[in-house]
Every structure is written in structure tokens, then in C-alpha cells.
Image 1: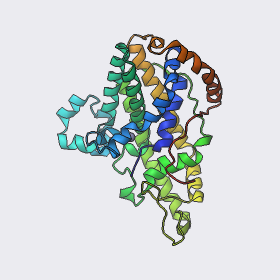
Image 2: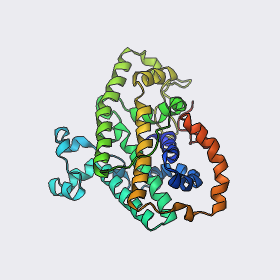
Image 3: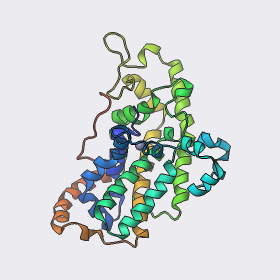
Length: 317
Ligand SMILES: [Zn+2]
């Protein structure tokens, strides 16, 4: 089973993005930081636990389906895309970028209407899909290395590695910035990810060639490859460490990109909605109470760290 970025990644992305927001947004989002953090995995729960069939294609885009060389000429507008490609092709490709654009639009409307619950729900979900767009294997047909004899690499890359080494990542991405062209930015994110998919696969193949075969996976007492609760193979610590080193910061960079973009997309929706006053949406006493905690959390954030929540562990350490 494949959870994009795993709980660790998605929850850290949503959580950290709140600290990048300007004050007028930040205090409202911080009041609901637990919700925004938990809901980071909501879209994956719709996909796997509820088996919502409409959900699945929203989490990826298989760019090869359109032909790699045509990427620049790929219509960024869904209507135009539908005019150019048959439905069967589009369905096979997935709808991640278009869904991000739709969510941004809905979030802007929710801000305009000052619908508190909708704002929080849509913002949390949107950040999930932005997280997916920053995960290279969500942009390629070879999403689990199944075409190159690397099955299991998806969960290894996005789940086990951040769980093992993510505590060292610097999650402070600076202040949220206004995005002039949301469509262009969405496709830029996808493009950056797509270019990295090949690299992360090639790096692992190279490592596998030189690494003692019997030491790649963690084995149980019968010598069988251990599996996590989603039935993904568990790699040995030594192998994970080496691969993480060879990736040379790729996972940290991608997670940082997701944090930064999540805050940028939230901020842009709020600005485009006319900067509604969000402090009216919560009781003053709640905001006041949370300010004390915020001071501590913000100090940590300045150092690039976050705390106060525990993502569900998907691999044993
Ligand atoms: Zn997802």
C-alpha cells in the first residue's frame, strides 16, 4: 500500500506551512493546527479506507502517458486537455495538477465567504495534493519502480527514509510568497518532481549493484523480508542510510518545497479573496490562549523544527 509521503511527510508539511504564514493568517491557522496536521492524510484515507474511486487519480499525474517530449505543449487547462486527448488517456494519466488548481479556486471562494470549516478543510486537503506533487514518483508511470525491478521503492523513499532521517531536516522555509500565476507554478512543481523521478530510481539501482544482496532488507528470524503494516518491504538501516546519503538532500528539498508551496498557495488564495479578517472566526480567548504556545513553537520553527504532534509510524525504527 502506498501513502504519498507517508504520514510523517504529509503531517510535517501541513504543520510547518502554518509558521510561514503572515500574522493575520497565522494566528487563525495556528488555532487549528491539530486539525490541519491530522487532515493532512485525509485524502489518502478517502482513497484507501473508504475506497472512494474518484479519489485515486487526484494523487498523481503520469506524464509519460502524454509523451515526455510534449510536456511543454501540454495544455494546462483541463478543458483544452480534453479537447486534445481522449478520456481514456486522461484517466490513465491522473488529474493531480488540475485538482490542485480546482482546490485553490475553492479555497479562495471559501476565504471570500469566510466559511471557517471549509477554509480549514480545503486548505488541509490542498496541502496534501501539493505534497503529492512534490513527490517525484507521483509524476511517473514507474511510480513504484515496478518497470525497473525496484518494487517497494515508493514507500521506502517517501515513508521509511523521512521516518528515519526526517528529524534532521530544516523545515523553516521562510515567509509565504504571493504567486502571480498559480497554473504556471503548479506545473513548475510537477516538472521539478518529474525530473527527479529518474534520478532517485537510478541512484537506488546503482546502490543495489554494489550492496551485499542479503543486507538490503531487514530479515525476520526465518530469513524472510520483513514487511510493515501496509505490506511494504522494510529496508535495512544500513541500506537506508546509504541511499539517503546518496540522494544528497533530495527528500529534504522536496519536503521543503511542499511546505513552502503549501503556504504560498494558502496565502495567495487569501490575498485573492481580498484578505478577509480571519480573527473574527474564532473567539478571542482561544487565540489569546494559543499565543503562549505559539511563542514556544515559533522559537523551534526558527531553528527549522516542529513539535507537538506524533505522526502514525508506518515503519518500525
Ligand atoms: Zn496522496
